[in-house]
Length: 74
Image 1: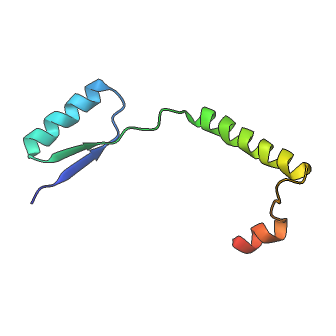
Image 2 (image 1 turned 90 degrees about the vertical axis):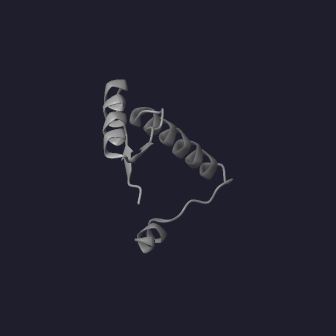
C-alpha cells in the first residue's frame, strides 16, 4: 500500500526537504500550490463584485435578497 504526503510548500528549500522525506519513506508526494492571488487582492475583487451588484440593483437590473431571506438561509 502506497502512502501519500500532501504538502503546501512555502519555498524551494521546504520543497526539497519534503521530496527527500517522501523518497526515504517510499511515499508519494503530492504538492498543492496556493492560489496566486493574495487575500487582499481577493478581498478587493470580491468587494468590487459586490459594489457592482448593488449598482445593478439600484438601477433595477438585479434583485437582491432581503435580510429575512438571508437569515432564513442560516
